Image 1 (cartoon, rainbow, N blue to C red):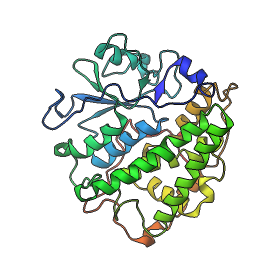
Image 2: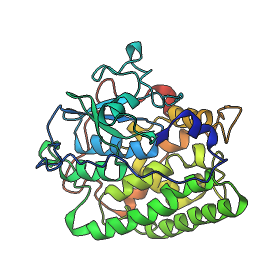
Image 3: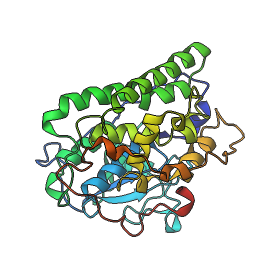
Image 4: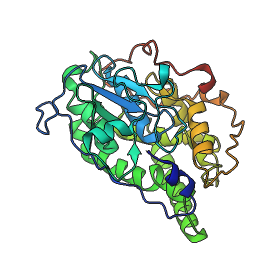
Length: 339
């Protein structure tokens, strides 16, 4: 998710186009891009408000990479310098010593003209940004970082299913993950209606797919579920109202609502979600859409903890593996961000 003062006020006034990841180096087992997988070397910088960054939060938890890959959480409210470490003591990230994520971008490329986005992986020794490629980061956590996975970590990108996972993820990305943004930041009626209709057309297809199976691909959780979840968990809180994706609420679709609650209640998913950060970011940062910056009180979050009955469809959430352990001390979502 990009940040920057001018871009935030421009939302709703300029046609929306998602920027490509400018820094697409990969951290790999063989270090072929110059960045070998190494425990303790890198820091994952996220906003809990951002769906793209939240994918990496879920993956890191499910795979048990907390000891290998440290975590920095930025303030959900940006200023003109973009993502800030104001949640930390003295407003500095304790590992990187910087106040703004843009400083790690500057160390990598002075005068970089693009936006400052999360998720970002930073090389702690040099303080340089390594990658902001949100599409690739989680795939590499699942495959290239396998030597550092916890015992019992699930296979989130099983080789035998990759073609199907890739196809589903591409459809979800185009129509749902990115579709809600195209609807929310549309600059004319026709553009908005096309994007909004596309969101709900794809959601209906996904609901049909999930009516008879617990997960999107196969009988276990995969990367495809992570990518759909991070949009669905934000749907009623911000996309329904703020982005005008309001043909129906997630809570009004029995299949998708049960599927979302099933994942939310699965260790590694809901325990990474901060509804307070989500709502404050969208409603207070996108001043082009919400000039008053008023954050709505609703929706009621208690339903996220209600029974979902999806276990009746079978499925093995972690395949041959096991659930992740408790959330690390210091990484818990504060009470105001939870149901």
